Image (cartoon, rainbow, N blue to C red; front, side, top):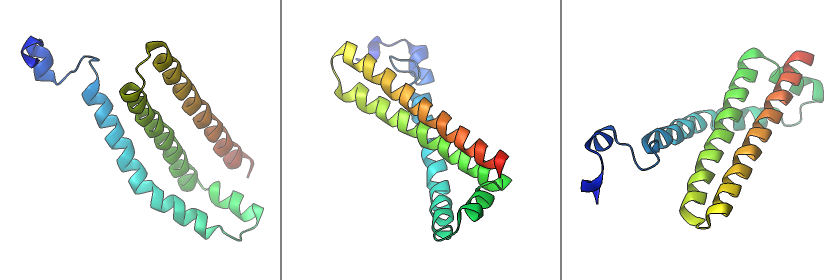
Length: 127
C-alpha cells in the first residue's frame, strides 16, 4: 500500500495525519524528561516527610526546585495527554466518541497542568 503514498511524504516520514514522527518524538522527549526528573521528585518528597508546613513551603519556593517542579508537571501532563491520545486513536472506533474523548483528555490535562502551575506560583510568590 505504500506505493500509493506521495514520494515526498515517504521521504519526510509523514503518515496520514502528517505529524506521526513529531508525535512520536514528543512522547519520547517527555518520557526522557520524566525518567530524569522522577527520581529527583521522589527524593524531594521523601526528604520532606515529617517536615513542618513552613519548611516544605521554603523548600519548594527555592528557584531551582520550583523550576524543576514546573518542568516535571509540564512534562507529566503533556506525556499523559500524548499517551492517552494514542490509546483513544487505537481503541475507540466510534468517530464522535473518539473526538469527544480526545477533547476531554486535552482539556483535563490542560486544566490539571494550569492548576499545578498556579499552585507552584502561589508557593513561590507567597513563601
